[in-house]
Amino acid sequence: MALGAACDREVAISNTEQPPAVEPADKPYVGVYAPLDGRWKGVFRTYRDTARTARATRSLKGELTPEQIWSDSSIVFEDSLLVEQHYSSQTPYFQRVTIYDYYPESGDTVLSKGVNKVQNGEMWCVIKKPDETVIHEGDRLEGQVITWERKEGNPYTEEYFHEAVRDDTYEIVGWGYYGDVDTTLSPPLWFYGKYERQ
Image 1 (cartoon, rainbow, N blue to C red):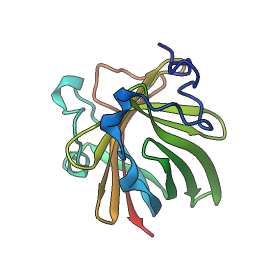
Image 2 (image 1 turned 90 degrees about the horizontal axis):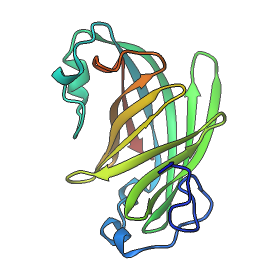
Image 3 (image 1 turned 90 degrees about the vertical axis):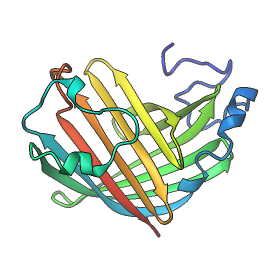
């Protein structure tokens, strides 16, 4: 099924304006996004793996930790940006998202908007950036941890990350493959964001 296709009979997954109808399969996810509600600010950092190994030798799924990045001497800091995120649940299944990415070197701020939603018994994050719409499919781990992933071609993109809200701290840890890269090796790019509730 194409991610942008209509799948609840009326609302496409890519639709960020209209909340989909709540179905029985959605009920286990009631309030799943509520811990994110509010305003968060922090730093998002990217890291480059300078000595990639066979993909199977690294733990790439499940709950990731920043120590998995920092404990490997081949993974080195690459860049950072300042981030402000606003989350506002409109229903227990539909949450509006606004993201401000500030790039210190250029002084540019990029505004993105979208939603976290439950649709057809599945979790979705749909973010409309200035130049693209990004759709991730989600899953819930123990506690208040959500995993997100996407895989698409032309250009090839594969991402996996988790979001964890603990008290007044919100962390993102993940990895990605972008463009013409060898996907049999471990991810070339890792990232970590830590935000504080405002």
